[in-house]
Amino acid sequence: MKKFSIAFILACFIFSANAQNVTMESVCEQLSQHTHTTGNFEQIKVIKKMKNRKIKSYGTFIFSTEGIYWNTKKPVASTMIINSSAMTQISNGKETVTSIEGNDTFKNFKNSVDAFFANDLSNLKKNFKIDFKFAGGKWTMTLVPTGKKMSSKIKDIVMTGTSDGTTSEISSVVISEVSGDSLTYNLSNLKYLKELSPDEKKLFIFK
Image 1 (cartoon, rainbow, N blue to C red):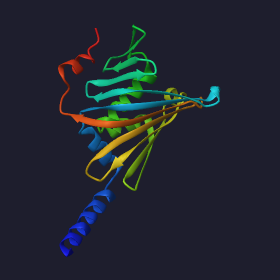
Image 2 (tube, one colour; image 1 turned 60 degrees about the horizontal axis):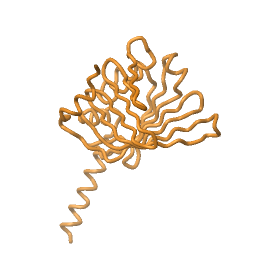
Image 3 (tube, rainbow, N blue to C red; image 1 turned 90 degrees about the vertical axis):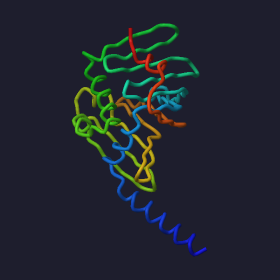
Image 4 (cartoon, rainbow, N blue to C red; image 1 turned 30 degrees about the horizontal axis):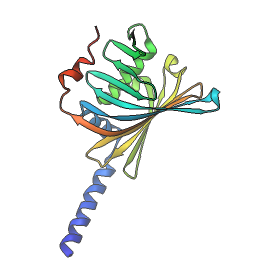
C-alpha cells in the first residue's frame, strides 16, 4: 500500500510539473508533430439575422502537410479541399476552384492556419494578436486579426484543446465574424497518421 501511495504521489508530481510548463509555444510544437490528422467534426453555424438560428452539419476531415480535406456528409453532402495553391469546393456534382493568389484575405487566413500547425509562431504573430491561457489541463488560444482586410470580416478565432505537458490536442475552433455570425467546429475521434494513403494523397491534387 505504501509503495502504491509513493508511486501515485510521484506520478501526480510529474504530471503537475509537466502541466506547469504548458505554453503557447509548447502546444504549437506538440501539434506540429502530427503531420497528418484525421477525425470527425461537428459544425455549428449561427446566423445573427435569422434570430441566431443554428445550422449543424457533420462529417470527416484531414489536416495534413498536403492541405485540408473537409468532407461534409450530412445534412447536405459537400467537399472542400485546400492545397498550397487553391481551394476546391464540390457540391451537387459541381466543382468550383478558387485560386489563393489574388485573394489576400483567404491567403492570409490559410497561411495562418498553416503557421499554427507548423509551429511557425513568428508568421502567425504577423497577422494576429494572440492570447493564450491554460488551466485544469485545458488550453485556450484567442487570435484577433490585426490586418485591415481580415479584421473587417473576422472578429476573432478561439481554439481550445487539452494538454498534459507532453502531448497536446485541439478539440474546437470558433470563428466569430464582425457581422455577428459564428462558426464552431467541434473535433473528435482524432487519429494521427505517419503518412497518407495513395488515395488520400490524390485528394489534394487538383487537375
